[in-house]
Length: 62
Image (cartoon, rainbow, N blue to C red; front, side):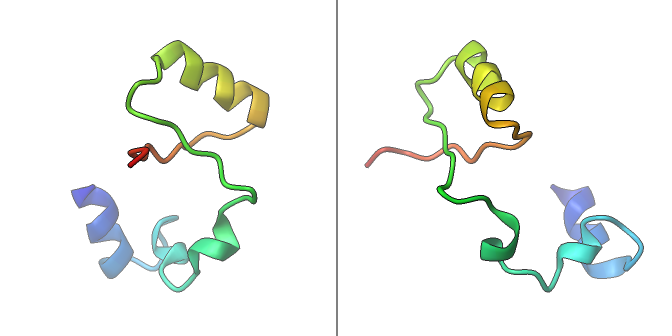
């Protein structure tokens, strides 16, 4: 995360830096795909393949 933060604020050529002014709504798919702390790595991996995604926010059900 430190690398991403440094890149975001200090380097316009970094991939993360290009996202600095974009909104979450512009980047995320809808409906949103989330995971839960109780999910196994296998279940998350299957979700990546099925939904053609490479990132998954993990949220608490509460």
